[in-house]
Image (cartoon, helix red, strand yellow):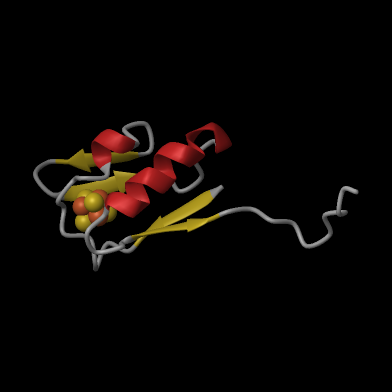
Length: 72
Ligand code: SF4
């Protein structure tokens, strides 16, 4: 999966950090740094962190291949 944090929106509130500490970290007082390609096992944590962000700065791209065959 891929994530993008809009650092222009991010206010450094850090609500997201404890929810996905392996993906989102604070450097210093309010500079957020993050892993843009977290493992899929981090998906739930990242989605919760994105939902917790008061300014919706965390954008989550879930991978949905166009050529995926429907399973019937
Ligand atoms: S919760 Fe949102 S505003 Fe706060 S540090 Fe995380 S991304 Fe930035």
